[in-house]
Image (tube, rainbow, N blue to C red):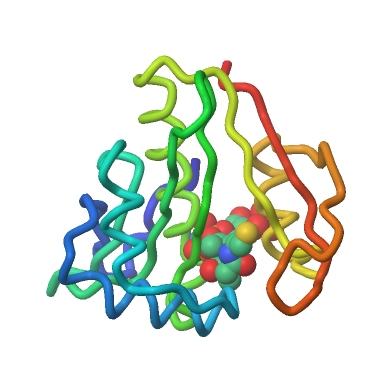
Length: 156
Ligand SMILES: CC(C)(COP(=O)(O)OP(=O)(O)OC[C@H]1O[C@@H](n2cnc3c(N)ncnc32)[C@H](O)[C@@H]1OP(=O)(O)O)[C@@H](O)C(=O)NCCC(=O)NCCS
């Protein structure tokens, strides 16, 4: 959707590798305020490895990721999605989402769902731009008690 700008160092997208776990769990703690067992990431990538995308700088240092799963028939779910604070608003999140939606389409999936904190206006705006809309309110969905929205869109 947004082309990388000429003055930014190139960021490329690749698949998740077990060596990415420290980066991913650090970003999940910092940006999503959640803490999971490190073994979770490899096990979640097992069924659909192409759904777990890493954005990396020219030195292959990760700067963002999108972890999607396909646990419900015909449906992709964005489980976790974040870009390092110092690399936001440069189109990296959009590139991750564009490639993820394309991979979900190629897999024959028809719908994508996700959950987001009700207070996360930045992410809600981002998802709205991607034609996601709120389909449900999830009470005390997060480990700290905050409510969530479930958002969804069709893959057309
Ligand atoms: C949500 C998130 C992943 C988006 O990542 P990002 O890399 O900043 O995303 P982008 O740069 O593609 O887009 C962000 C905004 O910057 C704008 N933008 C992108 N490139 C731009 C550029 N070169 N110049 C100006 N604006 C630009 C986009 O239009 C977009 O605006 P919008 O969301 O209001 O439509 C990021 O904000 C994040 O990690 N947040 C914390 C974790 C989080 O909330 N994750 C979602 C949990 S459900």
